[in-house]
Image (cartoon, rainbow, N blue to C red):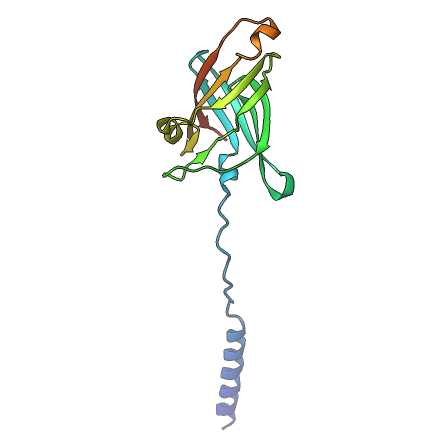
Length: 171
């Protein structure tokens, strides 16, 4: 009888001990997907065919005013050292990310020359194809113009220059 009671006590002790060692599983929260702006931000290697050269461009996410994020583009078109503005996400049917910088009437390049900068989104073909990040590649198309400034600046007239560049995200 003592053996049975001892066996039962040992069995109860072992089962209580083992049941307390069971690993509790907690539900892990789903991984947070990066925002559109986080996916757009990075360093790009850009080819400029009109100059037959490669250059680096960087897109940064900047905390904005009133809770709106801003975008900072460094070395845009290999002309403009720093463009910062509130980011307004634009998508097309493929849910791509857009580098939709606003129209600027006056912007000064790294050489001190004044330009106006325009996105060429009037044509639907341009709108659907250019300035969208697809995978790691973006075809950039912007128009620069010096119509309003060339006489006053006493610089050679360049007129409307359509700049088509191909950017590949490297970081």
